[in-house]
Image (tube, rainbow, N blue to C red; front, side, top):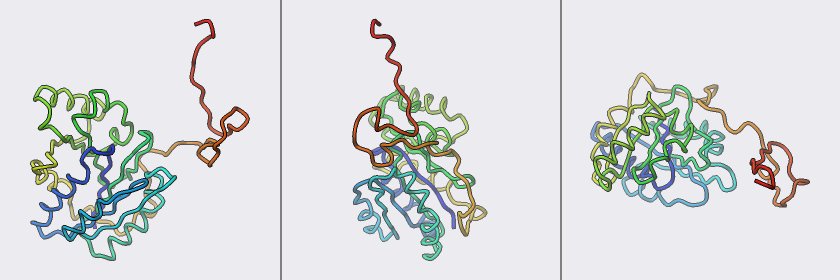
Length: 233
């Protein structure tokens, strides 16, 4: 089974891209399943079920969805193998721009949209910087010049990635993407022992551990203060 990790900011078009790509994969008689990770709510699983795609969803609640992803990926892979999938696609929204759910030797894809802002590629962090493939969406809403400038900004952040433009509404570009994500030689039986491409945050602060009170006396662990200069500045 091939494991593919797709991540990207909320509303960038991840689910639409996956649905269109699975249509193309099905035409090659490949069996595809999806596990959707989110924080508090998602009904995307209904869209997959409507297309008769095996699907599971997990809500991380108070945890970062990428931490939740890594804590559960072994069991998720076992579910995909049990269902005899050719491809298991995991979908996760990186929210803090500091984490990345990508695993070494597992194909990773970042979805980003043209409307997110010209400086957004620099803000997304390892989720974009360490991706194998970057998909840019919503190109039909902006001008050709804007598409080229945005694509150039993405390339500046991650010069090694393959950049693909996909229209999530029409599916244009999804067939080309589908040809890049399946390779029988990349089949896995487990992710146990594999490593993340990028480390999660290196330390915890009191608020990570549930503290709600404000004040220096309640702050422990990893603390970084903003430089506000002198009072006379």
